[in-house]
Image (cartoon, one colour):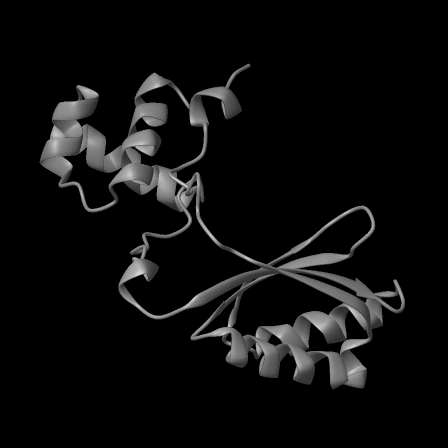
Length: 158
């Protein structure tokens, strides 16, 4: 599938407002409603659009956010699989990325407070199957540039 200027504009519009009506989207893009809807369906079926989600405003609820770097004791596939399985069962860990460099993974925790983070992180460190050799945590104090979408025009350049 080719990402032409219409598809790019659809992706840009939907990543800032996934609730936009097809009528408004088609007017914004400059296509008929049926052509616009067909493109959205194709972008979804081709997995350019993975899901439509609601972003919850965490400022409305009590929370503490932490980014945590994790180094594992071993680099083998079994250790990594055990670690991924263990963290997938912890609801406070909302995302995880495998990284190059000094640490193996970076986790994002959303907890009700620092005490809950401390309890969960201590349980994770105590779990021998997780095979964590080192963990460093960083409390988010302020979101100075919150995520507002990907730079699609740059990513789809030839």
